[in-house]
Length: 262
Image 1 (tube, rainbow, N blue to C red):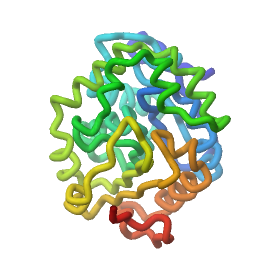
Image 2: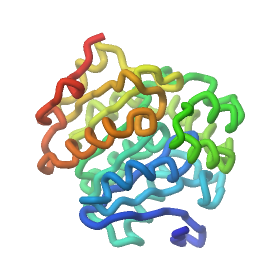
Image 3: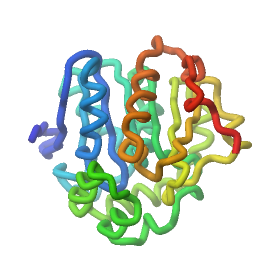
């Protein structure tokens, strides 16, 4: 287990591979651990880091640090401590929201974003996320695939307050405006059967900036990286292979990557 001390508190992270840095940020259920298969695939060409955010996994629980900006600040402090410069970020659920906040706070650091299960509006979040016990959320959102057990085992480590504070903050953020003003290349990924986060409407998707692209995995729920790992890892590799500054719309899109019209 790898630990870094930030402001006197222990932050847990893990690292695999060599090359350009790539950070993975987990969602509301689980911890860094469910990223292992994706990290292993990406670590062939990248130095991959996965962090447990405040209140999750084996990172210290500090209720005063559960707001989105503090979680984004954690990522920045971690990068400073590790000597990481320009970065690509892969975020999921809560981690996707933290990644967006990070880009707003530190716009010159992020080369590209891949955001999975990102709530484009606070109304896109199923209210059950705010009220159900963590173990119940894990049973609700995780499938039966063996890789899902990592998230299921880690889920009870989460401080419920960390989940609730982040969800309550979404009501205060104008997420759509933040996305519309973003120039960082960003790939949005959704599971067609995600019960927790609603896929943006066709009308909203059509207005997103040219620097963004949206892909829907038809056989996935809230965890596409676990439900369809080969497809997810291939999409991530294609996205990371783009030249710096290129929009994900510049991908040589395979049929499965094309924007779905529902």
